[in-house]
Length: 64
Image 1 (cartoon, helix red, strand yellow):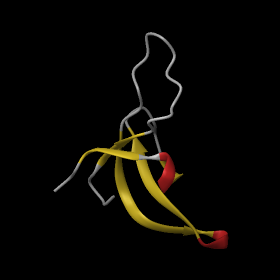
Image 2 (tube, rainbow, N blue to C red; image 1 turned 120 degrees about the vertical axis):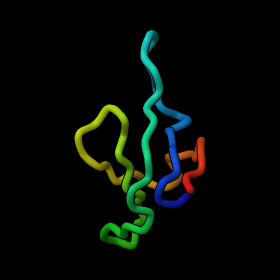
Image 3 (cartoon, rainbow, N blue to C red; image 1 turned 180 degrees about the vertical axis):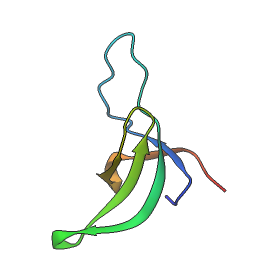
């Protein structure tokens, strides 16, 4: 995963009639306390960046 990739959470619970969340990676090298690596994702339906565990994400379209 790298900056510019589009991602989603394959195990996300999506209520009927809703669409899955899609986000773009804006930071691919964030370290949280304890050495936990996170990925900065700006979700299409959010007003801020969320820092998600790498294992929760799947690339759906690679950026340039």
